[in-house]
Length: 215
Image 1 (cartoon, helix red, strand yellow):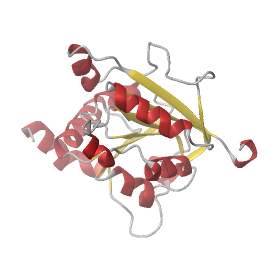
Image 2 (cartoon, one colour; image 1 turned 90 degrees about the vertical axis):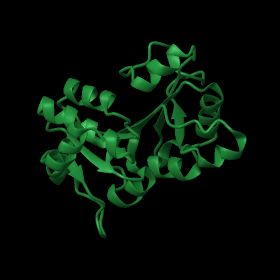
Image 3 (cartoon, one colour; image 1 turned 45 degrees about the vertical axis):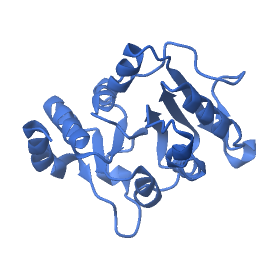
C-alpha cells in the first residue's frame, strides 16, 4: 500500500465504500440516490478502466469489487481526484458480493476483464468463470443485460466461450458465435498492455441474458 492508497482508503471509503449487508441486498437506488443503468466490474485491478468509464458515462452508475487493498485504494484515489459521484466500491470476494449484496435483476452490465487465468491444469478449479459465477451473473442481470469478458490467455478464452455457449440462458452477441472482432468496446487496461507487450493476443466475449420467454 502506498501512502496515497492508504490515505484514500482512510478518507474516501466512507463516501465510496460499500459493506456487505447483514440480511437483505442493498437498495442501489438508495445507494446512488437515483435510478440509472448499472455496471458491475469484477476484479477491477488498479481501477484504471472503471474510473475512466465512470468519467465518460455520468448517466450510468458503476460498482466495482476487488479483493486487493492497494487496488481499492488506487481506485478510490482516482475517483476522488475526479470528484465522481457515480462509483461505489466493495472490497472482498466477488461471489459473496453477488450472492449477498446485490438483488436479482439489479444490473444492466457485468464486466470481467483479464481475470487470473490459472494456466496450470491442476489450478483450473480456481478459475472464476464457472457454473456458480455464471448462475449468479445471470440472476443479477436484467433480461437482455450484458456480460463482457476479456483475456489475453487463449486457452482461457476458449474455456470462457465453451462455458457460456453451453448455457441456454446466455446468448452470444456475435451472431455466428465466437469472439468480438477488434477493436474491443472498452478501455485498454494495464493488464492488457502488459499482455500485448509480451506478444499475447487479446480475446473479448460479450453475451446477453435471455428471459424465460426466449428459452
